[in-house]
Image 1 (cartoon, helix red, strand yellow):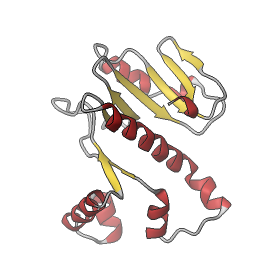
Image 2: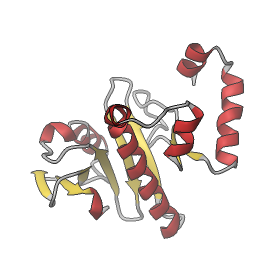
Image 3: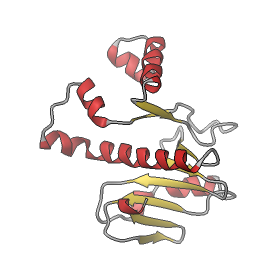
Image 4: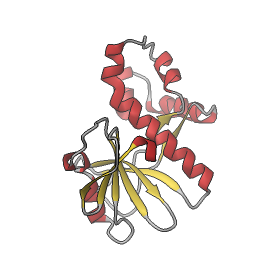
Length: 176
């Protein structure tokens, strides 16, 4: 919020109020950080997802164009996967939680699915040919939380599931 405040000239306190209104009106919701307690290298700022990217686009006065879609496709795809995961967590009950993970050194896992049995880090990439490079931040996460996280996924546009490493698979977005 500090960066948005700096860029827009709107005070941080006002931005917090605006984001709260967006949540209260179900336009969007915050995704909390995974594992921030007691870990100084993990950032603690929640992430915000919109329930409807059309509302977001209208608010910033984006006019649809193929060039705009091409420039925003990664963001839109990631937001859509986050919405799907969040809704599935809500349907599954309180034992399921969606979060994300980002370190001060720049490693970021798009989503962390917390279940009663395990924690699953998930990267989202718009690619038909995923590689281990697309999963580069999953390994540090798996190494940091070896007791709960034994496997990770890259959700992408591939046609069928693909093994990228011993404990990392790429899966088509249709399989989430």
